[in-house]
Image (cartoon, rainbow, N blue to C red; front, side):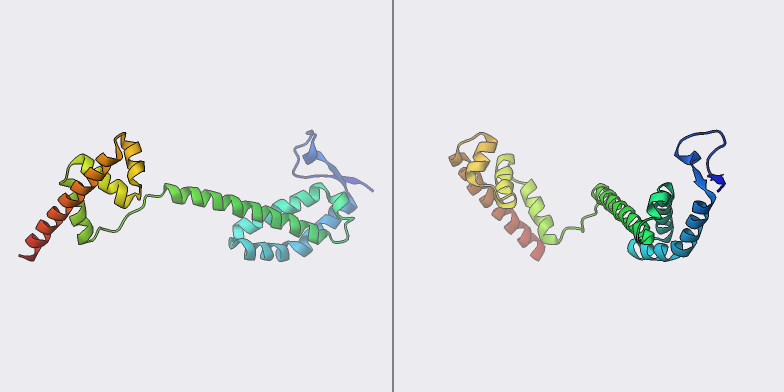
Length: 185
């Protein structure tokens, strides 16, 4: 039997690409490839939803089979081996694509819908009260912190925070009432 040189290998170079395959083995692989490539590609295409990607993954699976053809051809079902390799490659590819997509989604600029009138009124009212009162009200009622947590964060006594909250709520109520009266006129 005359060995045939892998035509993809440059002449005179060693390594896996320069492997010599017996003529019979090469012909067997060609027949195996021709008989299975379309079916496996169709299956991987159905899995990935991208024909070009499926073709690339199946080509990679067949390249791996060719590199191990002497062993793979002895398997009970070489087609199942190639299909499994293609599925594993597709699964890895889909996972990587998911990771990339999640990363890109986090980087995407998000646009909040415009605030409604009540929210605009609240923001204006908050902007019109003192800094300590505003901060205490926001931390307590928007962030959900306890009086003790606010006191610790701000480095003041709990009584001081309670005072800020009482005065802040009173100031907000006054500002929101004034705004309501102005809007009703």
